[in-house]
Length: 333
Image (tube, rainbow, N blue to C red; front, side):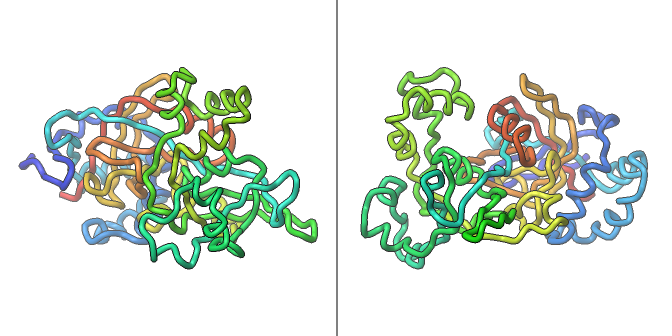
């Protein structure tokens, strides 16, 4: 089967196709949509296969599986120091109501990047953005829209993008996407970890965090400011075709719910098809996915963030998903 392959932050060990759990059961055609998206911006390794991938999009699952086994070699992803088990978490695209103008009910601003963002690294922290008049002056005129709930704004920034139903000044409503456009380069700190470290909660999921806030409304800013990282957005139109997919990931292609993952690119290059296996209290997964994104918290060899989609069901899954993970990259022979 050949030698192991070393990446910057992982080792790939060749294995037999029979080592992949659930290979015969996965409806591969669901993953083919994500693979077609990767072929819109393929890297040099996978570009030669993209014509075949496109032709196979209307083939049977059996034909797709046979082609994969003929053309690709599976490698088990391991940490450089050994060990092939890691962590799977989830993320999603929030769907939120917003107002173009500040009102009594909508007062939490979402910003475009300020003109001075690149002149200072890191830029001002969340607390400084909220409290310093000179920083507020730098953000004047940069507000895209206003949300009702500061925790929804924090969630949107952590997820990196979202769908916003904006009420315009004339009363009309538009559904748009807010896409990641930069950050203040401050470190990400988990507000759930902050609560756990204080002994304030036992359940640090988003439902648990919101329950704590409902009981401690005077401590909202204290919680928010424990995470100094702020994300800035750009507004994008959301035509019907784009609405069927998620936001663009780090590979530069739209994400596919249930078939796109964020990875550490030092372990797995963007555009790589990956076999994912994870069993836990939230979900049982044995399926083909595509490495199409990354995130500031996604570091390490066997580490992935599973794109769950959008809406309340995706939010519930992503908010609670934290379970063991194994990965196999599928690399051209």
